Image (tube, rainbow over all chains, first blue to last red):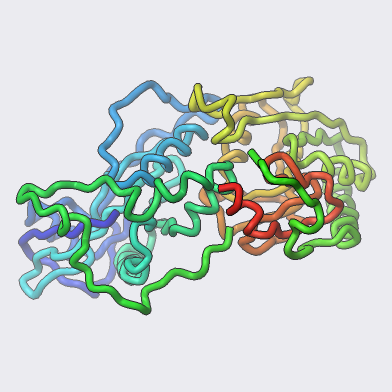
Length: 210
Length: 189
């Protein structure tokens, strides 16, 4: 799930990308902003060492993150099953700055699959947010053209559940019923689940096709 | 598990690939594979159960010497495997492939998760080369990008059964590949 974050410091959009540490191409202003703010830098850390292809992944029990949504927990179980290493929301990519250069919107993909160098963003919560997320992803790819991000829509999740014979669980794993409602420090649950986003009838997914 | 009666033909909304089309393509694939493997024998590894009909037809369309072997890998969601939570080899190769040219024969590649696991597993057996042949490719569902050497058909993002592909273990014996009517699986859900 994407998160908005705020920060302070210098930074401007629409600048030519440059290569910084970890080999990710980012806007040079972002690197500067990252140095000047406490916000997470728009880079990925050095990837973990590639596993020996002849060995299965180390799947010793590890603390599970607090997933924001049941569909994310299910995706984690699927990745574990097929021994694909993942990290949950490890990186944050600023996408919008105010005139003062402060980060006002950022993108934190749900999963990073280090061995595949691929980000997965689950978009199963509310269909009306799909267009907003698509727009944000386009912006992310403009700023970070080397990123490999796959948006996983509700229809993708349904298709995955159908493939694995778990279609009956889709209702409880997706949509509003699947969300793990976070309680913000001020206790405003409704705001935390983005109920304040105004409905937009044009925001709709393609019809589901398994 | 499917609880309502199966009607092999009425449950199919559309025939995507008829028998003649499939067989023509397999002859093409067989000719290509034969032309590409004239120097050394080839080992075909079929991934059960879905690729069984494809394997049976493809091996007979190949004109160079081949050995065959079979593997089966558990799938996520199967009751027998959920307790472990990890993919398992249900049936391993019956002979060594060390130093061999190996061609994995798949019925369909969609997410690529199973094949990604299988590739890692088979690479550990030190084959001389490892290639992939799939009858169907559904790139819209891909999670793991895997280079595929031989592709029969690239198909749209629809749930297909027949010619080895199943829903709830049924429909594999259809001689064509068809799109399952959505009501068949939504009713089951």
